[in-house]
Length: 214
Image (tube, rainbow, N blue to C red; front, top):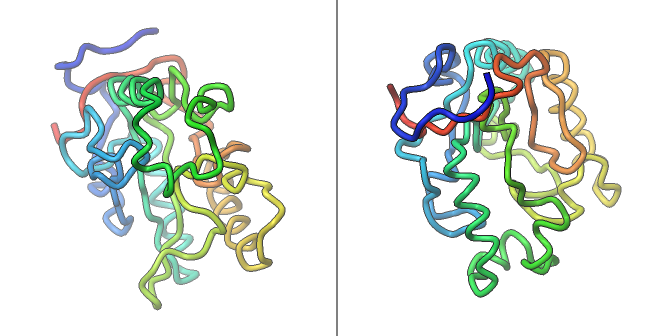
């Protein structure tokens, strides 16, 4: 079934709070906070939780267990993203005067080119419920490992195959990609942190209910 749910509808069957299934995964919901490329909480993020389809949650649980044996935890920045949040991004991108977060997220990029270069789009795979933005957390040392680039950085450094990295940064990206692929996810070329469950429950549906517990 194509299309969106209404704003006030509860989620479709199959959505869960990720940490209910995989409590060892760290969730830092950037779009619930002010620290994101817009600089304010994003529309539709009503609670700092990560929602995903059950299949995605179970696959992430296995990936997290795999990483834990190597001394890491998975850390989620974003999971399900309602269409209203994507619309918020579009509205922000059209306001060329608002560049308060430029130095952190797009210092090399003219805001007017964010659509042209594909950093902002009218649809997001996150709205289908089986995509995540993710990194690795070093348990022993207590920090995110160095991936050679930050989440939501609009520029070539975010590309999965960006060449100007240290050997360690390349190794870290390869490790994340290898384990996520092993557990049924695929990456994309433009964002090293973004993974989509290959066997999506809703491959053609974009939802619009808010991010919160139901």
